[in-house]
Length: 526
Image (cartoon, rainbow, N blue to C red):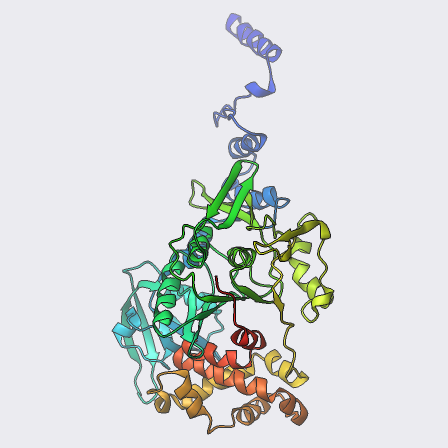
């Protein structure tokens, strides 16, 4: 009786001292954690919730909600996506070294990367991939990403491909050891004429500066006195890489940009005077999909009056992100500062109306006629700045080019739209054309030889026959209206199949209004 009474009294006394922060879970030994309310709630759920739950899953779903009202470029990258996200920045991935195209449920090797694992194993352009290891891919409705994921993997691991080759009856089996496959960030570098070099940069990754410098040096030896740098569609990348590239064109002491944020004191980046190409004329091409580091490049060239910017107004991203790793190998790409180009202007467009409106801005520009008329673009007069030479420029929403070129709608027709709507029939036709003529074209070395070979074909009429068999009726007026555009595009696609980017861009540029205007422009030297 005494023992029982002592227990009851003890229980009553315990209630007098109860406090929520002193709770202990009898079985799970719940101990309150130090930190934010979020830490405490997750800990409570983990130890005390009635059912078993995966707290990691709750965290993964909660993090995007935590940052959704921040700027549009602060993003959470789950651990499973880190490898893919960083590939272009790092400039390589583990793979077998082929470009493939999925045509009518058949995976076909378009191009074997020279010197890569597949080239060493004896794969050839045009090979059909039937199986990847034990998984059948021929005749299966698999996405390109799924197929790519099957062939990529850790460097040094093996993958077995079962192939069907034209002219060979039996399947061919090849074991390939995955290697480091480089990702080019300079698509093309060539001489457009005796004095003008062209370099197209698609991203700013770790290897971009080296690729860019090798291209400049090679073209300079070929007589380059003016360079056209095509940054259209380039969404940016690593800031210091862009700064190193800009430095090559500026004399000593020129401001390239500065960054500043609440927790980031102002930091200036100036040219060091060691640039090797201070004496050549520069033209930079941009459009509405040129963003971030591309805009820094164009803005620094423009504000220092070092070159001519041609095209359409750029995207308008003036925020600096740091990628910070988390314990599980995921990362938070956090905006830590704004960048300002030499005139002092920020080119960041407003994002106070939410992310949806922010990314709809490009569509709104289209609706307002900006892609067709320079006069439809209105800048805030309060955001007026001056270049080094006294020219007026504006902040608050992208880089406005010195020479505006409206979107080219010449050659557009309903027939052309229908061809593309039906699964990009022009590209499919060129793939089949290349497959039929592969042996005849194997000795073609450059785009000029290719154009000479293709001149004996009426590709547009051949494509129209191909399309009609696939449900697109002939439209004589549409074919006539779109003939130059279609003819050029078909040749460029075949150029890509035959010679990769070295065959595509020099041909597609021939009907590119922005490029042709840049070719005629003298540029601006120092």
